[in-house]
Amino acid sequence: MFSKLRKVYFFLVHYLPGPIPQASRAPNSVSSPTGVQHPATGYTALHAILKYGLQLETVQVTGNPALTDSCMETILAQNPLAELRRLVISNPSSQEQMMVVPLTLRSVVLLHASCPKLQCLGDLRHWAVTPNQRGNITRQGTPLCIQQSVWTRVRISAAGRGLKSSSVCRQTAVH
Image 1: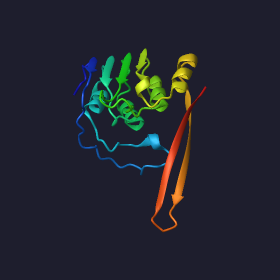
Image 2: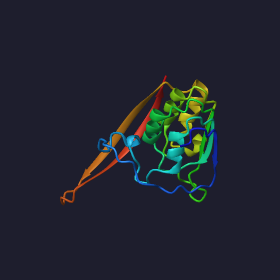
Image 3: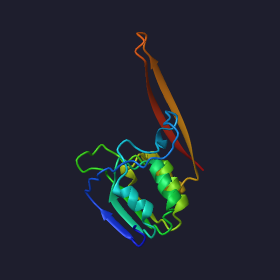
Image 4: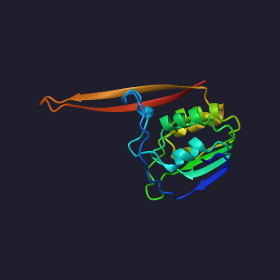
């Protein structure tokens, strides 16, 4: 579909979600919040371009909350983006400054391992990568492994109204 596409520049783009590809998958788990196979927001044109753009060298786009770590893992399994030199995914929306692209250190590691020609990866300020993690990547090179810890708090209602839970995920680069 996009086999000869080399450069993509999308700015201030609002992606329209399409139907989510149906595949058998394990249920979502609170112990792996970054492992959501298909986000609730759907599958977008950005997913398709990354998945089928076999010769991509430069991708500079407005991000999308539908692009998750699991999406990136699925994309790289089909298209390792072997020619990619520059990938910049910026703020998902010019109107919502607090929104981030839900790509974490996990995607940074996946991209580093999959894209041998990658020279520029950004804009990590708009990803779910903490300033401390960005500093560690800059000072020590891209990490080889990620250690992920999840803490889940479960509240049980005395009135029998059910369970409420919340989770915190911490990712640490291990060298």
